[in-house]
Image (cartoon, rainbow, N blue to C red):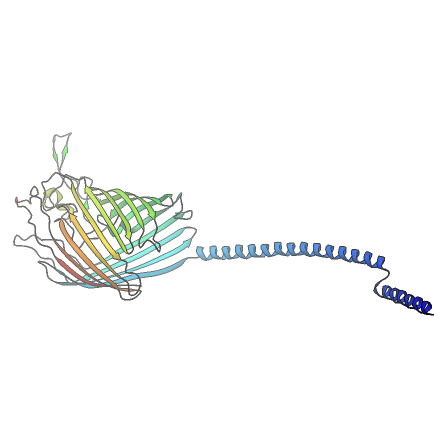
Length: 441
């Protein structure tokens, strides 16, 4: 009986197992085959999914590339669209100088820059200056130093064509019209309103060569012989000079190498350069540079030599038609030199910034014919200068800067230079205090 009951239990188990097998799809062998098929199907689906994902990734890349191309195209169109951007400055101050009356002077500059697309640029600018200074003279009736005048000047009216991405190696630009001519730190030349043809070429990203040729429409009239009498070989006698034919010739060749750009570690650009130029009748060779030293301390300087040794009186009969073109004291047939060296701490650019500068300035007598071209026009002209100065500047706001400038110096005399009556120029004290407020917009 027990045996029968045991066989029935075994049979029940087998029936249950069969039923279970039917419910899940068949026998154990069939279940194994089914599992293999499901795995193969799953692998095929994974493969198809991966292929689809790869396809979607490619489509996404294509969409991003299309968006980037569209943005570049829009940017290019926007860049090529002509825009006129205005900027300018206002400067007003009180200047006190030894042996001169105190004077108030103001200056207004306005510039407009337009990007016309495809590398074409335009620039316009005006300068208006007002001063209370009046011309004065000594007991001989001669004017002492140069003096400032009220004036309205067309500072800029020019067109530029850039080739390539200007600033990269083997790119350049050509500018034609009225513009500011400047080389170095401005000891010899920093003058707006000159009529120039300017070419610029980047030899490398850090080396630029510039060449400029032209005249200044606001200067003396002269001719190729500088208003002097010359020898007529055919007739064997002195021939009177031709009359005025043009303004003073002005040209220069300038090479500059940039060692490092301004950064968080460098308060200013680090560069050096040299130039040769002519400002009829003078011929200048100059060296200049600027460098950070440590922290906020930096220095700049320029040294020039004038190789013109043949000078003439402004009062020569042959030069009467030249509108006082020439010199008051002549006789020294040697080269003249000049230099400026400045030591700065800080760089007043943002509100709350301040800057201190110490300057050493020297220029021989007759290094310049007048004070119209140098950045240091408050100190330099025919009479020469030697002195030391200090400047403190404080940035009141993003646009306004207050500066106090103090110079101690004197004019420079050369005993070989005399006027038409045989007198030597004296060395006179030339101290100056200048308080000015500059606002840019």
